[in-house]
Length: 129
Image (cartoon, rainbow, N blue to C red; front, side):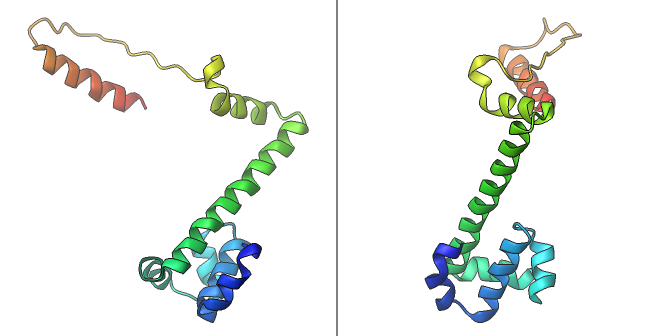
């Protein structure tokens, strides 16, 4: 967000204060609102009514994700098994690093149409997710 200082100068001072609080609290709206003295409803109204403010909040989300990614990389470099497994399961799927689900069918569906069976399977698949 620091590279957007020109945009912050154009914003209402309360909005700029809220953006700084969002950055400080890594996007946590409740904590940022308390810190900036802004109501949650006001923040969400600003998001709808002010495209510049909404864009700055969206950009801030990218900054927060960058922070989390760096923290994950730090844990990987420290040898954290959990961090390594998480990274592989999210980034190494094409190499087989993913959770696999199995669907166990316990009923006979011989009296159902193909469409009914497909709908039931889709419903079970969604439950498994």
